[in-house]
Each structure stands twice: as structure tokens, then as C-alpha cells.
Image (tube, rainbow, N blue to C red):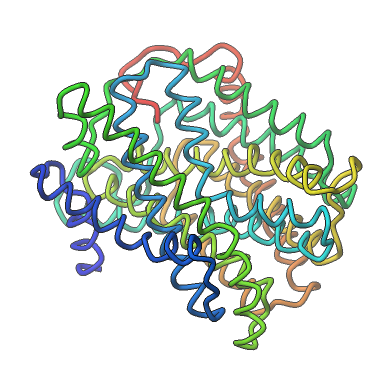
Amino acid sequence: MTGVVAAVRVGLDVTLSVPTALVRVGAAVVVALPAVVVRSAGLELPSVAGMVVFGAAVLASVALLMWAAEVVRVDVPGTVALALLALVAVLPEYAIDIYFAYRAGSHPHYAAFATANMTGANRLLIGVAWPLLVVFAIWAVRRRGRQGDRNAVRLRPHRRIEIFFLAVATAYALVIPLTRRLAWYDTVVLGGLFVLYLWRIRRVEHAEENLVGVAATLAHQPDVRRRITAGLLFVAAAVVILAAAEPFGESLIAGGVSLGIDEFLLVQWLAPVASEAPEVIVAVAFALRGRADDGLGALLAAKLNQWTLLIACLPIAFLLGGGELAGLPLDARQVEELVLTVAQTALGVAVLVDLRITRLEAALLFVLFAVQFAFPTPAIRYLIAAVYVVLAVGLLIRRRHHLPELLAVARFGVRKGPFQGRMR
């Protein structure tokens, strides 16, 4: 635990000197450079080497985008900033998934990989990232004698907005496995929910954000230098994503064949781990600094983005790639994965209805996630999905007195008070 904590602190100090910040930016560029060079030269790498080189580039692009997006928030006001951040957040995480959906338009066997990456990214957040944050948050409170709950992480009232939209999206997501396809109307509904979410949160007061690490250093530069730097970071990240997304996806498939590993599993778990890691590290860093609400709020917003905007993008990519307007067809395995993801999300919503997640609930989310790997047969996985649903219904019944608050916040907004906090 101590070693992990130290690593997070090194990467996210509150203040950095300009040379130190530039060194860290330079390190990310160096990590990404081999992928750009290989792609530009038209070279082909062995599958395993390609997984490493292009996967590292995707990871580096996430860091570059995070720094750029945080710096831009100094200059871009309100709703524009929210829309920009929402777009930026999806680029590295979704580039591979959108590529697979696009390819599925002319090569149907790629459809499985599109849903694999999407379901893997969604389940990792609730099954691993949320419990991990709770562990570090409680550890920080107990270790340092901080004020706060020693057995749970609490959210501020304005987080009910994300919880409400996540609940609505989850209820609608039941349509997808029932119809056995991702269709244009899923794009309309889920994309519309995401837009409505952005419109809704614009009404919530935003406190000034306390930046840390590289972003804090760059944000304190003179206006012209800061804006040019943010623009260069965006351009660099975009170049890396364009260079690395396609070969990384293909390397995962070829690597699975050469290593004797199910390529579906590699696409489902390895790619999301690479794209989610920096965001999880930032959330954990918030928890260690006594800002567990900000950390869990960031992960909650990420889950909502993936559960709405990501799914909404896939039918569009499929159509542009030559697919039918009827949408991306799903086979039995993909339906199984979606059912499990919907059920897990329902439990995640039920856990957060009372604006807190206890260490016991975090452990439950992780154990149910881990059991999926120990018993991968369809019958067991549907049983796990049923367990998720039963637990979710039980929690919602037990916490039914919180439901009017959730609906009231979604409709009328958060009343100003001592818990009115910053929005991410």
C-alpha cells in the first residue's frame, strides 16, 4: 500500500517547478513517440511488441489530454468547458472501440470486439476503480487522522444528478440485449441523455477547481504561453491517438492468437486498463488528499460518459464503416456481457442512492466482479447478473426514502447549502 501511495504522490504533487513539469510532459511524449514513428514509417511490429508500443502510446495520450483539458478550464467558461471536457474524456478511451465498430461495418467479426471493449471499460470502473478509491480514502482518513467517515466515502448532494442520469441510462440499456443489436435509436436516446446531462449540470454552481501537478504548473503561466501550451498538448495527443488506436486494436487481436489467449478477453480488459489507468490514479490521488468526493465524483462522471456517449457512438461508427442502418448485431456472448454490465450498473446506482459507499459495499462490488473470472460459463454469469439485480432491488427498497430526493434534485436542482461543492 505504501509503495502505491508514494507512486501516486510523485505523479501528482500539488506544486511543481516549471522544469519538472516539462520533464513529465516530455516523458509522456517520449513514451508515445515510438508508436508515431512506427506508424508514420509504415512498419509492422510483431503482435506482442505492437501491444506494448501502441498500448503505451494510448496511455501517454491520456496523460497529455488530461493535462491539456485541466489547463483549458482556466480560460473556457461554464457550459463550453463542460462540453469540451466531455469530448476530451472520451477520445483515448473510445478510439479503439469506435475503430472496432467502424471495421464491423465491413467485417462482421469485429462487432464482438466493439462490445467487448465497451463492457470491459464499464465494468472495470464499478468493479475495480470504485472499490480501490474507497480503500485509499478510508486508509487516508485512518492513517492521517483526517476528519471524515472511517468506514465509507460520502458524496455531496449535487452528485445526485450523475446518479439520476446513470439510473435512467441503465433502465434504457435493458432494451439493447432484448433487441440483440445496437441501433440508431440507441444513439438518439443515449446521446440525448448525455446532452441533457450536460445541459442540466450547467445550472449547478461551480467552485474554483484546485489544480495539481503538471496542470497546476501550466495553469499559472502567462495567458499566451498557457493557451499555446494547452493547444500543443491537444494536438500531440490527437496525433498519438490517430497513430496508435488502429494498430493497438489489431495487435490485441493478433496477440491473442499468438499467445493462445482469447482475443475477446484481451480487447475487453487490456485496452480499458490502459485507457482508464491515469483517470483512476487521479481519483485515488484526490482520495489521498482528503477529497474522496471529487475522486469518486470523477469516476462516476466517467461511468456516465461511457454508459451514454460511448454506446451512442458505436452505431454511428458501424454505419459509417458500411454497416446497415438497422444497427450493430449482437451474438449470444455479447448479449451475455451486456446483461452482466447492465446488472452491475444497477447495483452501482443502488449503492450510491444514499450518497455513500461503505467499505462492505465496495468489497461486494469487487468480489462480484472477480467471481466472473473464476466462473466464466454463461450459466454462472447470468446467475451473477441475477445476484446483482436482487441486491440492487433490495438496496433500493431499503433506501426508498432517498428516491424522492434523487428525483427532486434531477428536476428542480440542488438547493444551495453547506454541502454545495465543486463540479467536475
